[in-house]
Amino acid sequence: MKPRDIAAYVFLAVTWGLSFLVLLKVVHAFGWVGAVTLRALIAGITLFLLAAVTRRRLDFSAGWWHFAMVGATTVAAQLIGLSYATPRIGTAMAAILVAAIPLFSMIIGQLWGLERIAVRGLAGLLLGAAGIIILVGFPAVPVTASFAIGCAASLFSSFSAAFGSNYANRHLRSARSLELTSAAFLFGGLMTLPLLLAVPVPALPRSVDFLYLAILACVMSALTYVVYFRLVASIGATRTISVEFAVTTIAVLAGTIVLGESLTLIQGFGAVAIIGGCILVLDPFPRSLKAAALPSASPLV
Image (tube, rainbow, N blue to C red; front, side, top):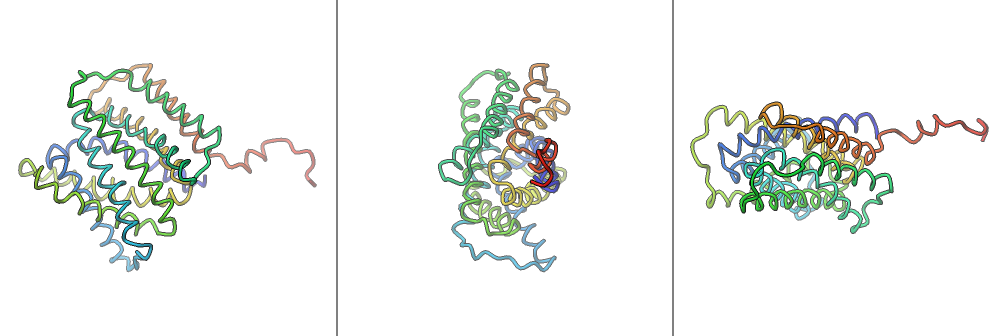
């Protein structure tokens, strides 16, 4: 990985890890459908305005159907599942189930022949999954029907994100990140807009709620997804999606510090395992540096 890729990876991990806290406030104010629809539409419009201000010509010649598919999966389905699940199962559990995305991505990528996962990468994914299990332990709330549906919605969200990322990697590899992100959010927001008739905004939001919505849409959605899709094109879908392991760790730490959720020593070991899994999957150290560190038989060979 290049230093630029590593910086993008860290940026996504921190920003998305903290986004769960903001998401809770936005869902509470706008409802779970309103949170998704307004977030997606604002993010999409922001990116189109950015392109207009910078006089960047957008190219959608790859076909509207492919952009719509990414919007339906990576935006609409993923955010609907996540926004529905988070208030019902809590930020920590939602973040931990989000970390299943790399596992889904690995399976889809293998089935589609997009990537070949080496033993090192597979070991990293398994180590990350083990860390998630350690980090979660057992749910701190009773296992009710609402909790079970919330978990199912979160897993559906994770699968949708993995499917959409691999679909973009397969069909829209030539598309630039700005075009891909802006179109995906606009399509995703338009697809969820009719659901507001069934699940309307519960009450008139406060001014601070609109601020949270703007942060979630413009920074934690528009900007991060541009970085995300650019990273997918650079290092592949599975390696990029492994950022969810780090997102989980940061989200749990944020929940512990801000929301007062408990974090045990065993869960600390789980966080370390997740970070170790990320390192194995990403393999951030260039092969040339590894080779240089080894003694060579002859400098002339």
